Length: 102
Image 1: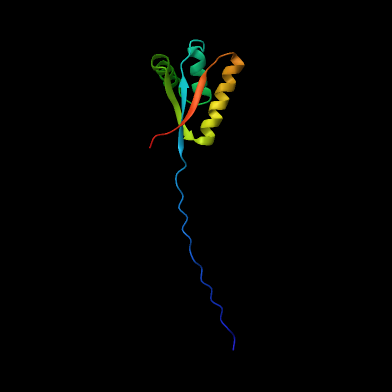
Image 2: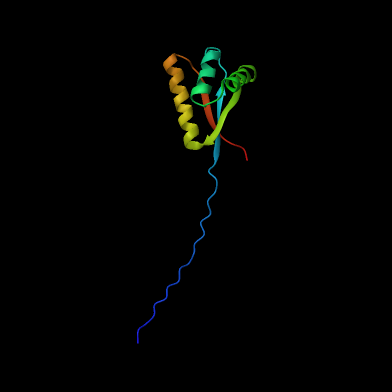
């Protein structure tokens, strides 16, 4: 008589959480030109011209503004690219990455 094999599979539920998000903040300074800030916002943070100009004015008037909210790796990458771009042009533009409040 042939034995019948049965196998049971247990399903394991894996809970995936959304990745934490981080905001990239650009700070005002007295040396970086407004045009350069708009250029950074358009080229690195992919903002439309009007939005980039509005953000630049907010940075100028209030001292800082959120350029975007991303996962940590993307936020860090965009911050590094913007800083590198600013240094290449001789500007002291400062950016930071901070956790988004929940």
